[in-house]
View 1 (cartoon, rainbow, N blue to C red):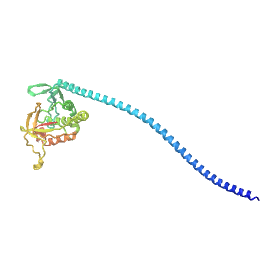
View 2: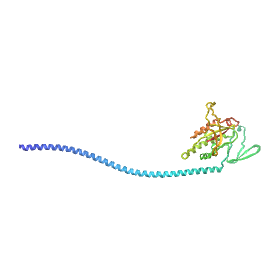
View 3: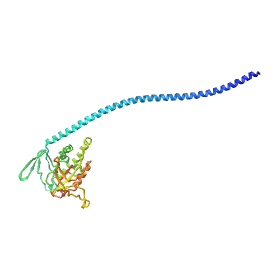
View 4: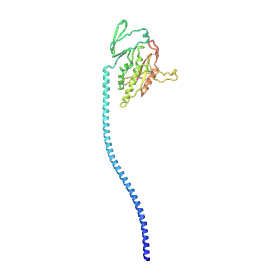
Length: 327
C-alpha cells in the first residue's frame, strides 16, 4: 500500500469524525434554537393577545369614561330637579297649612260637640226613660220635666251608641293643625258621671275603646314620622291637676321616703303669659323629648295614676279634679 495514500485516508477519517462531531453540536444547537424560537413565538402570541386585550380595555375605558360623564350630567340634572321639586314641595306645604287652617277658622275657632252617654246600670234597674231626643246631626231636644222641652244646637251631636272612633274623627283635624304650629285645645265639660274621662281617655287595655287623648297622641306621631324628612319636630309634655282650687304637678318624680312612693305634688306653680301671649305654667315639670308614642303614653299613664279619684253614685272611680295634659 502506498504510505502516502494511507496517511491521507487517515486524515480524511479524522476530518470526517471532527465534522460529524461538529454536525452533532450544530444539530443540538439547532434543536435548542428551534425550542427557543417556539418559546419566543409563544411569548409573542401571548404579548399580542395581551396587547389586543389592552386595546379592548382601553376602548372600554373610553366607553366607561363617556358613560361616567353622561351619568354625572344626568345626576346633576336630577339633583337640580330634586332641589326645584323640594322648593315647590315646601311652598305647597306652606300653602296647604295656610289654606287648611283658614278653612278650619272659617268653620269656627270654637266648636262645641255634645255626646249623650248610655244608661248606667242603676238607671236601667229603675227603668229610666231617655230624656234626650236627637232631631238631626246638629241638634237635640231635652225633656226637662215640668219646664217642658228645650232644643239645643251644636256643631255636631253624638248619640249614646256612638263609638270612640267616631268621636275622635270629629276633632282629629286639630292634630294636623298642631303639627302645623298652631295651638289647639280639646276639653270635656259635664257633670259628674257624664262620661268626660271615658270620652277623653277611654279604656287603656282596649284600643277600640281608646278615647280622644291616646288616639290624638298616636296620630301625632304618624304625622311626625311623615314629616321627619322635611321638618325637625320635638315632642314634650306636662300634666297638671286642679284639685280644691290648687294646681298639682302630676309628672314630678316620686319621693321614695313617702308611703307607696307617692310623688311630691307640692310645687310652686304659677300661671303666666309669655312674650307671645301664650298661657304657660311656670314651675311645671316638662317631660321629653318623647321620640315615640310609647314614651309619651308612658308619661300620660304615670300622671293619670296620680290623680285624685273617689267613688260616687254615678261612677265607682270618678275623677275628682280637673286635668290638663299639654303636649
